[in-house]
Image (cartoon, rainbow, N blue to C red):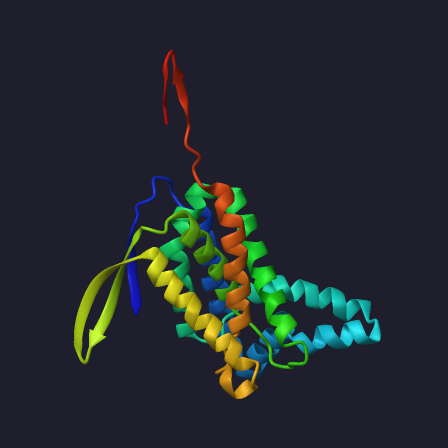
Length: 236
């Protein structure tokens, strides 16, 4: 399933969503402009490595603990490939504008960063002995998707399917599209518990953690019905 757009226009310009996308693109351009060895060092320095934090905690190395905390944030702006970047930024553009409109610009920005930190923390819990660097904005975007799932469950997602080689466009309700996406993340995350061979290099638990955080925060921004009282009746 390839989501193309949502039939859920926003009335406010999504300032923070665009700034986040721009920041990710600029960091990626800088990253690929570096020589290969320097680019890998850049990723290893600013990406989040679970084992680094584990060793820092085990040995009481404050500098390692603090830097690992920093990389929980910086890793959100790094991507491993052009496809990785495009898929993440497209999902953010698709779902971010409506969530930003409902939350407000600054609250959305804070929510986005907290989603990313919670997501990477969830990844750490299930991969604390891993020396593989984790990078990407997908955990934060999963939080945005979780909030969208709660706030706009009936919004239509125009989705592209391929029946053999024939493209088919279907309007899928957000709760179905995002719900199926979450089930796929959860099932793959559970499979990783049986061994790294099932991980496919994807931080499934970061997606799961970010999504659940969005599910928890999202209801705070549901529109409340207002009740107006007239002499002998209420209008809800």
